[in-house]
Length: 207
Picture (cartoon, rainbow, N blue to C red):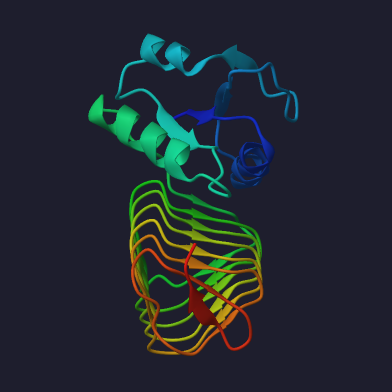
């Protein structure tokens, strides 16, 4: 098992450190613009320290969250991947992930989450604490499925979409690329790309 460097020591980064420790994954340390501490894992400095390691001796873990502006998380992933580094797929041991699902590079499935058979999740996406992704869903890259969100079967979620905390999405619905589903929303109809849907039932509004 290659050792990991966690990029970012904020809230999401610290949760990932917990997950890595629970998995028994070796951690070299954390990078962050500010000095941070998490479970006595060493603080290494800025992201520039990654260049001290060859691309084949470490794995990176994207500890940047995607609430608010998701672009820094995606940018970090694409920057280091373009340099030849690989990102570890992290599955907390308290998550349930079907062996008949597919998790692409850098996917993170947090504690209490469930990913069922036939699901495909794209690069650098997060299935956060207690979220449920039911059978045959197709999730794009750089997506955040926030804590407690529920996606019923055969839901399609485009790249860079955000499914808010506690949201519920009925079976067969499509969420377009870059769309936002608000906290606690109940989505019964498809949402176009780049739009925001809020409420019960969810209604599309301009941002």
